[in-house]
Image (cartoon, rainbow, N blue to C red; front, side):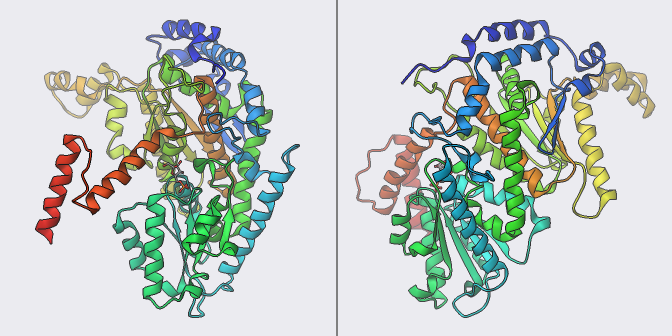
Length: 549
Ligand code: F6P
């Protein structure tokens, strides 16, 4: 494979090292004091989103060096290569054309693929309409009331997030998500459902994924146990896959299969028929707005200069925090309950994409790549891990995500949420000095001696770097823009690290070993070639089975 670039070999990277050294000990207070108007100078907007990165630990020269890095890495050329369908996934020799899934018109050279996308969109629109209008009936003649999406990874996290995030737009059909091979996941979901009015959407790009196939078999048995004949099952199962032969072999008729394509990565596929459950949940028009919001971000990504380009800036800030400040993790804090699943979704997007130890050329990298991503909805995390954010020893750069308004109609209560978000951001920024801590203790009636003893525990260093991503409201369009923003940020970081963000070879080994171990669990007579630690747990599992028999 041709040699891939290396982050630390760009000339701008040495400049960045110098900048990082020069900024050692800098405080956000100093940075604001030394740069009047910083809050405006370090704020951008695009596709309905605002990005305020003024609370990052960098100054204009460091930002200039980051932009220089983007130029040296020729990010504009890489952006065009992605969007026009070049083979950016080099280890699997294919493009990553998730942007085509939300395009309104065919980009030059992609007319054939776009025609397939459009035809599939029409089918999705029709299915959503048939189900929402009650025209599509279950096997006893009653209208469908519930949809169960069976899938995992990209065939679950995206649709689950979108359905959850757009629940204010939900119509009459309830959508449920089953992913885990743990039977409790499916069992708990089915407990509240009626087989006669339930539709299963089996989402699996490969149609080979153990969890999804196992749950789908169980779901089929559940339908049969309720009296559905094989012919009836056609009304209750749809498949979304690239592997239509495997889906038909499973028993889903070809006319009930919707395609996706190998040029769509699983974790980038919510815009395709993998998003069918969401389209059913919120109706086609809202789903189309979701696609349009992402397309607006695609245009911004393609057209905005690097210095104003939201995904590029987010990526450069990720590189700054990861490779220059040494942060090993990144926390996402959505201040909107509807976005509670955003960290889960972003974990797959960023960690499956950029959790790589070799370059796109297979050569070792001498620097850190994708950080650990985690987070939870505000204000939940405030009463849990924010303690560590404020006073722990781990540097946790953060993204606050804040819609300015609520769909609930409870604007008074929402004001409290906004106040909490801004308060957490400000506390992370300014912290609290020891004299201020002492003062506050004295004001609370502590003696001077007790105040002095307690004050160090109240000190908050502040200077915790973070972004604030805002939108007027969480709508289908702004949600689409937000997810596309993170997709493109992930791509840019992959390019800068010199890795391929579109493969995931690291997940294969565990799957292979899982098959071997299942063989051992199923048949005690099989001579397993297992390490002693695994063999010991298998033996313990066997004895637990015997005890519970
Ligand atoms: O195991 C990882 C993975 O391959 C993801 O990349 C993918 O989103 C998920 O499994 C599900 O795959 P499929 O859609 O083929 O069932």
